Image (cartoon, rainbow, N blue to C red; front, side):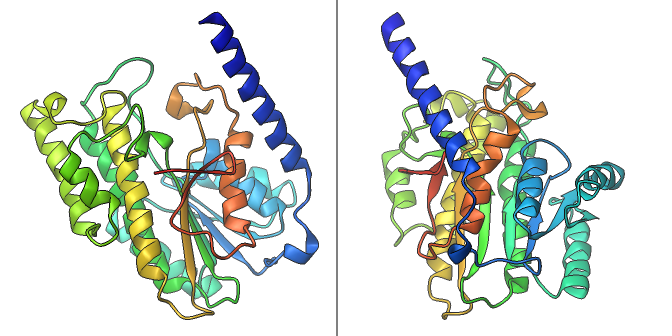
Amino acid sequence: MTGKKEKSIEKTEKRLQEISLLRTIPYSDHQRWWSAETIAVVTGANRGIGFDIARQLAGHGLTVILTSRDTGVGIEAAKVLQEGGLNVDVHQLDILDDESVSEFTKWIKEKYGGVDILINNAGVNYNLGSGNSMEFSKQMIETNYYGTKNMVKAMIPLMRPSATGARIVNVSSRLGKLNGRRSRIEDEALREKLSNLETLSEELIDNMVSTFLQQVEDNTWQSGGWPQKFTDYAVSKLAVNLYSVLMANQLADRPEGRKIYINCYCPGWVRTAMTGWSGNVSAEHAADTGVWLALLPNKEVTGKLFAERRELKL
């Protein structure tokens, strides 16, 4: 076992070195489709991964809208980036508050005329360490899934026409894989419906999370065939991943010049407040794949799940 563990660590370290090297290579000028006029919205960007995504996007020359549920905290975070010479604006946004989302939508339309990139980073995780409490399952599902969905629906009408297409990146998790080793949905009939574009629907995803929450309330979730580790988080991120696949399929019919590409990615176990600072990946490194997906010149990549710039099978 020791030898396998050492090989695994060695493989991980080698991949981290590869990613670090990639991050030092500037994006090629001939592939650069964005400019200072490109507007990128990052939710939950006052700290952690979201802050680093905002910093890196602004560092590439985009105009970034840093959003935060707490106005004062958001302003202070934006000041840090602005003092570094980056083009960053800031606005209050609570992705679970319809009035807040509506106000933000109105503000950004009036001030910028629209959006080119949306990074759905805002999310929560109340399960740390080896615990698997269901105490905050409802909040987890509401924030991670419904909050993300709220922003996608609010921003799509504002996404500006572009020859290269608008981009949506949802920060998610490999724990939300439909057939993952640690997050497999045991209900074969449900798994088949969720994996088939002919039967996948928003209603089906909503029903899945509703069934889970009902079983949590009834204290029967352990026999419901749900993932047995980080269960509520895994279910919330599975819903995000499936919704991204669904939206990618629905948006595929948009005409050229009005295309919108949507993908998700797993940042890993990151050293942030969300993990109780127990992660093994820096926020800077964790932000990389999200920024890469947002700026990807290849317009055909959509409806996929990535980790460390590599596609994962959902």
